[in-house]
Image (cartoon, rainbow, N blue to C red; front, side, top):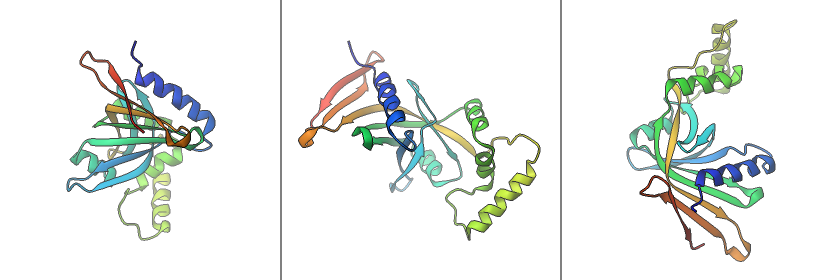
Length: 193
């Protein structure tokens, strides 16, 4: 019987939620722009399952620009308290509007207003300029629901490689690699540390 990497992810993620003090859903996202220059930044996992791993962003910022130019990406979860990491590689695609709308509705009102106020990744003259824009959005949407901005949505990374890394004494680490099988399941193998 083969191991399901998504069930293993669920198990490790559940343990991380109890052991990590802050942002157990934080993951490094690596992208490459149209010129082949790599970039990595931390984002938050907001959904996951056999269909992939979801995160949200401003589509006018650098990460979205990178992903739209080259949809190949990698994720890394590192849970220092557990001495574990999970590396995931695959191709991203945009989530549908209903999924993005549903998630946006769960965000705090301040986060929703911030999504309207931010020109993510663009130069900013001062923090005061951003806070002024935030206050303008607060006034604009006073007394009403804040809709999802048209430039804000999410990506779903569909994995084609998932590696579970467990720290072991004397650097004799355990590495389990999952790759898609021909029958639609997953093949599991080991990697040298």
